[in-house]
Every structure is written in structure tokens, then in C-alpha cells.
Amino acid sequence: MEIGRPYSRLLHRLERFNALCSDDRRYVAELPLTVANFAASQEVARRGDTPSRCTLVLSGFLYGHKALDNSRRQITSLLVPGDIADLNTLHLSTLDHSISALGPAVVAFLPHTPLKYMLDRSPHLARAFWREAFLEAAILREWVVNLGRREALAKVAHLVCELAVRLQAVDLGRNLCFSVPWTQMDLADACGISAVHANRVVQELRRLGLVDWDCRQVKIRDWDALVKVGDFSDDYLQMQTAVKEALPIEQGLSEYA
Image (cartoon, rainbow, N blue to C red):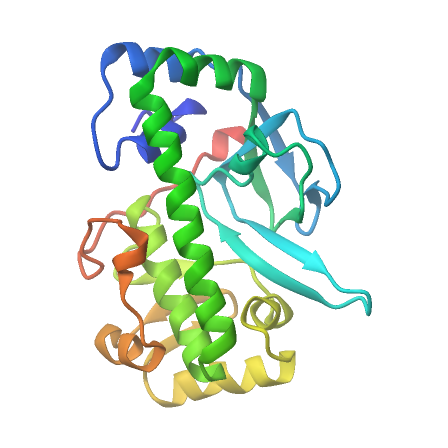
């Protein structure tokens, strides 16, 4: 991956399954990306917006969420570096949820018009972007199962397993250890439980010896046991990487901060 270039995250993402030819890589490199910084909890896009651009996560985390009438919210997705937060806006004019930064984050905005033009020119890139949309749908389906049918302990364990796999796939995890700037309320809203219950679940995972959870850093101590508790299988993520492999920690794109 070409560290220091905003489009390198996108190339890295698109080439997980098949290498791109030189022309396709050039098309991506020539996209007019605009880099922007967001503070923790700052909205990147709001429900009801009619975006003219897609949002690529360069560093940090974003999350998708919907607010209920009683001021509660449901976190519907977590976006890690390399993810496109709102790919559906290429074809759906109105955003049906909000997107915010989970801690400080750096993003690149991809204008719709040149992005669509690029996809029209390259069937290979068009297929790659369709695959991203299908993977996003697969993750959402798994979140529906997690929210609707698993107990609280399994919900949190499953989410931790998913993040470990997704972060390792973009070189941001090593020795099953990663940092996420979430609060107990963020964790609760992602798992559909109360903040008090989330705290109890974290304490139970610690007690069972499955994780070390120090503030916002999570280290998985027993992967196999955590997988069993969370009823987790990474098939839906299609990452094609072994989670037990120790990959080097990516230092992130701090030059954009």
C-alpha cells in the first residue's frame, strides 16, 4: 500500500480479491479526492441529506446510526479505514441514516460524478464496487442476527471478533490487539443493550479470561473461546486472511491529521 496517498486506502480495499490493471489503478489515483478531518462525535453526514459524494475512511473510525423519537439511537454500522461509508448514495439520492466520527477521524470525499464516470469506463472497477456493496449488505445481515437473536454476552463477543478480523485485514491489528475510541454508551448502542449492561458484559469477558479491555484498547487473550461465546464465523466478511496471523501494526495516515 502506498502510504501517504489518500487513494492508497481505496486501492488496498479494492485489490483484496483481484489485482487491478495499471489503467484501473490510474483511474483510482486520478479521482479528485478531498481530505477532511473530523472531531470525535462530529457528524460527517446527516439523515435526509442528498450527498454528491461518497466518504472513504482514511484513519480512525466512523459509525452509521439512526435516532429514535425518544432521543435514543441505534448504531447500525462501524466503518474502519478503507471502508466507504455511504456507497449507496451513488444510486440512492437521499441518505436514510446519519454518519458520525467515533473519535477523531480522517476521511476522503469522492465526488459522485467522476466516480460514476470511472465505473462506466472500467467494468473491472464496477464489479469491485458492486462487491463492496454486497459485502456491506452481508455485514448488515449479520448485525441484524446479532441484535435480534444473541444474548448480550454473545453480542459483544461477536462484535469484538468482527472488529479484530476487519482491522487485521487492513493491517491495523497485531497479536489480536486493537484500539477503538468507543465509550460504553457507543458499545451499548451498537449491541442494543444499556450502558450498565455493556459494562457488566465487559467485566464478564475479562473475568472469563477472554479479553484484556483497558479503556479503549482491546486485546483478545483466547480467540477460540471468544469465537465460541460470540457464535462467530468470519465467512460473511470474505476477508481471506487468518485472524491468528500476527500482522504488523499500521501506523495510520497521520500525515492527513
